[in-house]
Length: 108
Figure 1 (cartoon, rainbow, N blue to C red):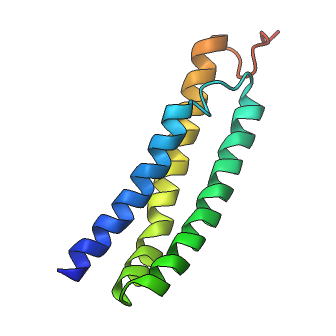
Figure 2 (cartoon, rainbow, N blue to C red):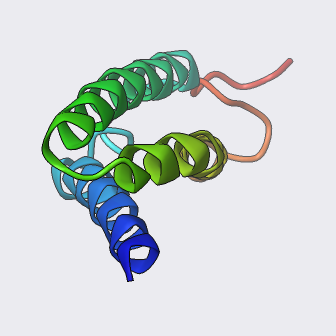
């Protein structure tokens, strides 16, 4: 039962982070691909910091299994989120600028 609840804690953390990013449209509002990639890198850094603080917090408040499950699953979920955000960047930038560019300028 504790393993199930630990998985629920992991799910709630990442769903809350992704819903915050989606609700604020942090990636979609960027003008160029380079800026959007920098935002994705910043989001990854924020995810690592928030995940570390969250793991320390649940390690202090909850039984031992919760932080262990979080630490084991967090890198895989974070990697999936980065791939999702990068796909979103390139899909959004190609949709704005056309098939020949990533930053709004036409290729010669």
